[in-house]
Every structure is written in structure tokens, then in C-alpha cells.
Length: 437
Ligand code: GDP
Ligand code: GDP
Image 1 (cartoon, rainbow, N blue to C red):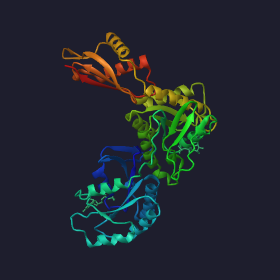
Image 2 (image 1 turned 90 degrees about the horizontal axis):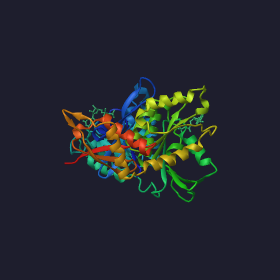
Image 3 (image 1 turned 60 degrees about the vertical axis):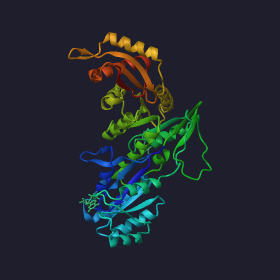
Image 4 (image 1 turned 120 degrees about the vertical axis):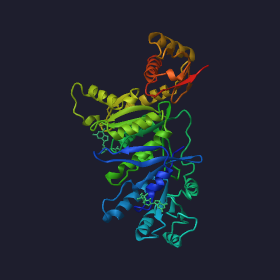
């Protein structure tokens, strides 16, 4: 399922961030690559009933002077219009309707996206007289809430989830490999996608006849079916000012959730940036298979050791994904681009690999003989039995005498032994412990 995006738009001080903080569950900080600009709290995962969505606080961009409030609001509205599935337009029930509200309403009304007009700071059950003025914005029934008193939030969330797009994501056959091309703006995501889709041996499914925008791009290569996830989001170029391009990362995250395999793009001319680490970290945490693709390799001046040095640097910066293969490509000269799908297919297989329990236990027993499990206060960790409980990503359960005795360095040792024996290239693996009486 696609994860819908909800954006909050509104004048400064109407209560956007108060509202955001009330709803925000797990937060993902986004750090801009520019020095000195660190903003977190831009978006958060929210759960309501059976829905999961991403909430964006476009107010993360505060104007530095009053003069530019209006232009900032236009920028906010643009982000919302380009990124969001549902727009929450927040106004202030205490100050009542003001001209700037009308200005923004005019922009939002034209989008064709669902807009919910929310009147904040209605702190009691009695609606203020000014409430009715908001009907003039012609955005339907205003929804009263109080962010500070947490009033009306449940009803509002009900209204939000009702407006999520229905069935806008197709279900793909199980054998299709779902691929997310991820990375920061301008790294070459759309160039790579177009180069791969432009290859002779790739057959892009005929989607003519469908009325809505196709979100994903299914295609066939050799005997294998693939889907590029959220190509609409990548190919529809955002014209918003550079300062706010980080919002496009939200789309990357949504695509990761729906994919099996991620193509994590790095710009060879820039090296690994903070933003890259965040995005790659998300793919890792989500348990996806990943290939690291260093693009724009044509633009790098090369000496004998350039590639080796580069590999070292990536391993260093993205140390949590030492399992990911690295490819150096150029979307412009097409150098090694044909390797990408080959690698995607390979790591997709590794990601779904299930190893035989007998062999797995042989490997672990041998590992234990070579390097004894840790002990504490005279008590030693005993490993009884190991089994793989799932694939995509592979998860192993180790039955032990006492979980307290486990140690991350020993877990890493076991992980390395499993990888040595079976591969699992390109995929994170998880190891869990269970006590057995
Ligand atoms: P933003 O600029 O739109 O993000 O607004 P903030 O969330 O920073 O809120 C601006 C001010 O309004 C703060 O002083 C908040 O405490 C206050 N505020 C926010 N929500 C409410 C509310 O529901 N009721 C009242 N009375 N004040 C609120
Ligand atoms: P996206 O924002 O990640 O989708 O990036 P684009 O595909 O739009 O590419 C951003 C810019 O980088 C464009 O100007 C491309 O022409 C350029 N670019 C993309 N791939 C390469 C490459 O392999 N080599 C060079 N030199 N430039 C590239």
C-alpha cells in the first residue's frame, strides 16, 4: 500500500507545529546538506485506525521577515500541492479570517487535491462567531479543533483518512521485483530510470487507456518482471525553490516502504552526504535489499586508485550497509548501467533466500567451536538451535539459555558466519534471541 502524504499549510502562528507535534509519532529528522541548516521535525509518521500516513509540516520554512510571509505561504502551498495527497489548511479561530487566508485558499482551491479547512484554537465546545466567516473561503465545512487542548483531533483524523486516494496503487504479481530508485534531488534518479527503460531489451507495460496518472512503471527484462515504484513522483519535476527540495525526500521514503529492492543513488561528484545517510539508513531499517549506485562516474577525474578509494569512502560513510554491492555508473555514457538490473535481480533473490535449517545449524555449531559465546559472572551463553523465521528480509531466531548473556559483538560474529556460508548479499539480516527453558 502506498503511504499517503498529508501536508499542513497555513500562516505563521496559527498552530501548525503545535498540531504536528500532537500527532507526530516516530519522527524522522531530515538534515539539509547545506552547512548550518539543520531542520528536523519536517515530517513524521502518523498512525490512525488502520492507516499510516506521512505528515509534513510545511511551516518548517519560517519567513525571516514579515514582508515575505505571503511568498513563503505560496511556497508552502506549492510543496503541499506537489507532494500531498490531502492538504490540511489551518486557520486561526482566535484572529478570525484574514486576507492572507483568502490568498492561500485561492491557490489551494485550484489544485484538485482534497483540502480540509481546519480552524484551530477553538478551545471550548462553543464555536466562536468568527468561525462562520471561514465558509467564505469556499473550501467546504471548516473543522474546528484545539491543538493545545487536543479537542476535535480524532474527528479531524477521520476526515483526513476518508480523503486518501482509493486503490491508486496497483497490486503487482508476487514475482514482480518492486524497485525504488532513491536519493536526493539531482543525483540522477530520473536519468537512470529513463536509461534503463530505454534499453532495447526492456518492455514497458502498455498503460494506455488508463485515465489516472500511472504512479509506478511495470516492465519486463529478460524473463523477469519488475516495477519501478513511484516513477510519477520522480519524473514529475518539482519547480519549487531549491531551499525546499528536501521535501521530495518524503516521496523516497514512501517508495522505500513499498519496494523490495532499493537502488540507492549517490552523486559521484559530491560523495556521500548527510542526506544520503538518512535515506540509506531508512532503507536499511526498513529491511530492504539495497544496491548502491554511484552515478555521474563520467564526471569524475580518475587516477589508478580512484574507484578503490571511493569504495572505501562509501563503506566508511555507510558502514551500516556493508552488505550492499556498489556499482559505478553513468546515466549519460550508459557505462555499466546494464549491470544495475542484473544486480537488482541478484540481491532480490538473496533477500528472499531461505536456508536449510540443518546446514544453518552446522554453520553455527562450527562458529561456536571456533569462537566461544560470551560469558558473564561465570555463566556462559549457550546456543541451542537456530532457525530462519522469515525472508525479505531474512530473520533468524537463536534459542539460548539466557538472553542477558548475548552481546552485540558476538551477534555480529554470528551474522558474519551466516553471510560467509550463505551470502545474503545486498540484504540486511536480523538476528533475534529467544530463551528456551
Ligand atoms: P505555527 O507557526 O503555525 O507552527 O504555530 P505554532 O504551533 O508555533 O503556534 C503558535 C502559537 O499558537 C503558540 O503560542 C501556540 O501555543 C498557540 N496555539 C497553538 N494551538 C493552539 C490552540 O489550539 N489553542 C490556543 N489557544 N493556542 C494555540
Ligand atoms: P533526479 O533529480 O535525481 O531525478 O536527477 P536527474 O535525473 O534529473 O539529473 C539531475 C542532473 O544530473 C541533470 O542535469 C542530469 O543531466 C545530470 N546527470 C544525471 N546523470 C548523470 C551522469 O551520469 N553524468 C553526468 N555528468 N550528469 C548526469
